[in-house]
Image 1 (cartoon, chains in turn purple, blue):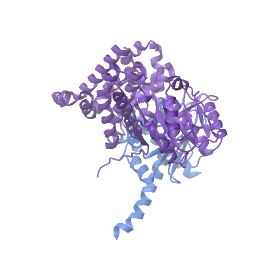
Image 2: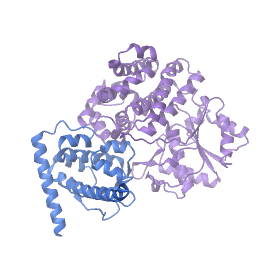
Image 3: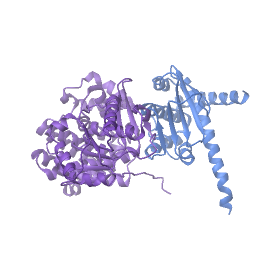
Image 4: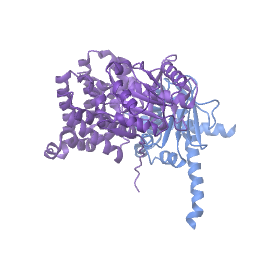
Length: 395
Length: 181
């Protein structure tokens, strides 16, 4: 009898492609929503990304009841409380989060308060606290990397206690994720590169870490194939809307993969580096990925070797002896990083970021050991191991 | 027919085994925090008075342990003296049995969604490391390799035997003291 066991869950309706935004009025009214509230940030509004969302709703006979556009990069309990107050005052009945990870996490947290009641979001912190479905919640991602539109997690900072509150529940998953190429068309090159490397890391770790399963594997490999095919094309031609859509879909697919199979040491180190040095998450992922894969190599040789097919295509895969494919995958990722460095100076080492001090590496290693994702790394990681990986990534 | 009769007995035996293992583990956690410096360097980071439990959902066997300060742990049996700060819950007694009979590694059980963590995940990671270290000491290497993700290369046989003996002695003493009281 096999000991294998896995769970896979993704009830999010993915609405993707040309004119996807225009499907929103139909989908929202189908959930009896008449007064949606948009939750977003100033950058999204300034980039003009709200205009097509509002126009699509208006043309479809649905008025946006309220817009909150002041979500900060690190959303807080105060912001969530304020948005919930406005939501109630304006008698809204659904939420559309438009933006990256922070706007989406804020939307999820606001949805808890307006559905469950109360003003203190901290009361709902933790796993499995929510016991029933929340209000209709749609997500329109404006970056192609986080995958937050298909994850059941939100993180909000409690300013008073200076801690990050995690919220985990399948009820946080949005009803629909709207993947429209118009929303990522104006992303600057370095953000396009960093967020795509974030998605590539999600897919790679989902495929090589402990909770991998056949369904998440399928999403992970499909995401990797799309990123490998489209990232450099989009970097060369940022207005390539077909390529943009491929990256956005890849991000969602990688999100589905990792939310069902978790991630590993790349994320542990990335979270710790983000907390201590305030480096963008995607940049951390891009820096650490090859070094962690080298550390894990002997535990993941087989799955990592398989990824060469999706990273480099069938010719390179078949020309590479099976025993060298894992190293080939790491080389392919290094090659992609080198190219991105040439195109937009996306750092390949901690030294190249200019924002990390060598003296901070020990603190990063210590913090990374307590990160939840380290549990799913295929190899056990000691403090010395983490320091060694960091030293290699230093440059 | 025979199978039908045996099943309730099997369920009872499984439950009794999980209860016993929780009692042993709880006492062993207290013991290892007294005899092992490396364990104390992990547990000392927990807040003083920090209370954690491992429990089988919904009202199954449990072990409650408190960090009393300076890295020392205290086993409280299966009833917490106050609400716990961290709860690691097996979804079913069968899942607890898989882990406690070393058929499934703790890390694999997490990966397989057999367990839920309610509380600060970083403390859960720390406690998992302590559990791994405990299992590496008190179990024969072949069994420990089935229980932990990677058997620590730096634990040598003489150290293992001495630590294991001291832990088992303390566990036995604790059992006797509990029985007397």
